[in-house]
Image (tube, rainbow, N blue to C red; front, top):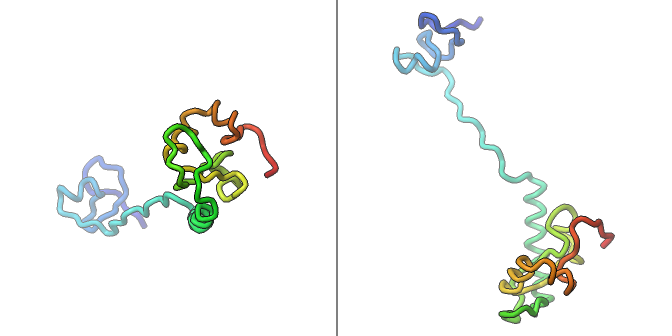
Length: 133
């Protein structure tokens, strides 16, 4: 049966050897019965990790297949280095190669910073409208 801390007026439950709660044990010489460190909350789900692994594999193959930058913005280096997700990276678009665009870093930045021009050039799709691609 659980006991209350020996410290006068304390209403915490006994959690240490010596009869004191964790707060009072450090002052009265009790040792903690069970010091458990909470498990860290995983930053990514196992499903997300699987998708990222698949994305890295598909992404390398995609860039190899499309070596030239499709952006052609001012400052373009001509060589594709990154993948722009025309319809965003959420849901099925993350792994859907139909929504990808091989671009250099300069053009990728230009696409992200100029959404109106990018949509006019067909380099970004509206993320509010569902597409059947």
